[in-house]
Image (cartoon, rainbow, N blue to C red; front, side, top):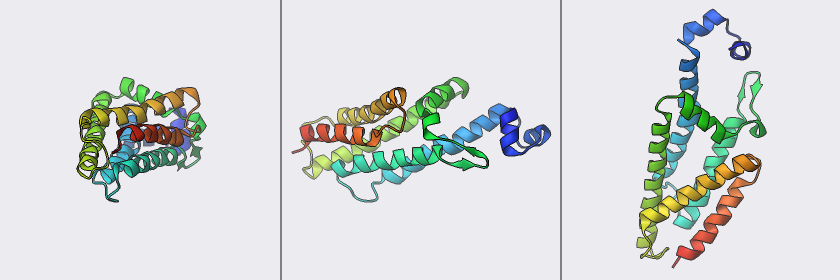
Length: 182
C-alpha cells in the first residue's frame, strides 16, 4: 500500500476517497489495462479490417497483440516504469485468477472469442481455396490458439518476453500453414 501511495502521491485518506479498497483498485487496473487491452486488440482484428488471407492474418494478429503487451509493460506511470524483463504476464494472470473472482471466466470468454475469430477466418480461407477443405475448422482454430498461447507461456517461463516470441510463433505457424495449404 505504501508503494501505491508513494507513486500516486495520494495520502491514505485521498486513496480511500477514490477507491473503496485495494481490491477495487486492483480490479479497475485489471479491467482497464489487461482486459481492456485484450478486448481492444480482439475487437480491432475480429472483423479482419485489412482483408488479410489466413496466412497473413495470424502473424499480423500475433505481432499486434505482442506489441500491445510490450507497450503495456513499458508504459510510464508517473515515477513507475515497468520493464518487460520484470513482468511475467502469465504469472500476473495466474495471480489475477487467484485474486479476482470471475477473472478466469472472463479470460475463458476472451479465448473462446479468439477461437471463433480464427474459425471464421479458416472457413473463409477454405472458401477462397487457400487451405484444404477437408480440415476441421474448429480443430484448426483451437490448434492455432493453443500454439500461440502455449509458446507464449513457455517463453515466459523460460526467458520472458525479451525472447523473440513473435518470431517463434510465426515460424511455428508457418510450419503448420505448410501442412494445411492447398
